[in-house]
Length: 168
Image (cartoon, rainbow, N blue to C red; front, side):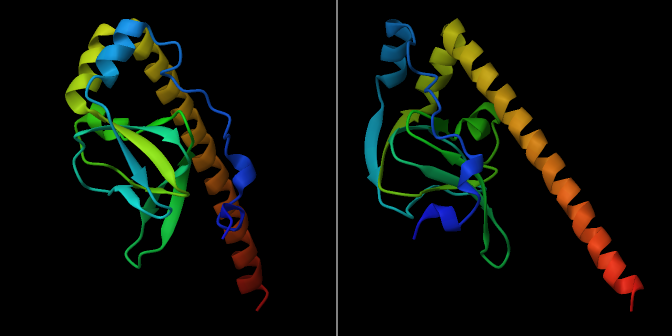
């Protein structure tokens, strides 16, 4: 099944650039010193909501959905990450549990970077810190815009329901 049928695919930018591209060689070496690659099959879960993070994930190849599941198991995709992107760092930085789950949308090659390595490089690398801050700011803007769009849609739907109810 194509992901086009799951949600409006045209809203996702699959041309993102990795924040690791052009990282100073010493920083990149430290970051990747204990990195390990793992293949994930389509649909395979990478991390689950409400579990603790022990590192971050770098998508070497493929697409990953970040999603929330309701009590009935229905999934709401909140983000699609592509080749070159990092996932799982929100929980690590906040020292909290994962706020969502992640699973492969297609066969993927994903590298795991241990928490200690990521935090060490983040503390030493001005370049990585600035890029991560910029990325977090962008994600916040996207999230804010999505919430606003959702809220507007809900108002329109509510008005339609109200019109139907008052015309009875």
